[in-house]
Length: 65
Image (tube, rainbow, N blue to C red; front, side, top):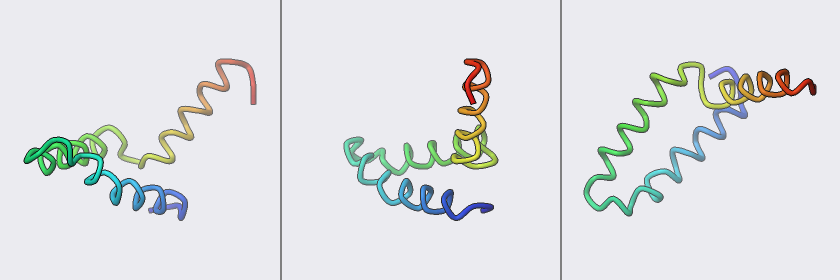
């Protein structure tokens, strides 16, 4: 909600995910719901801020900026 880039990434993922899950034949709705729930539980700030924080943390461990 805080960034335009995050909204664009989220919209792209929500658009492509059902097509990628079509291989689950009949279970795609259940898998889609499970992915959405896991995202809400484990990434409450969103995908982009969580990944950005992870990359900053990893680069700090390496000693690079």
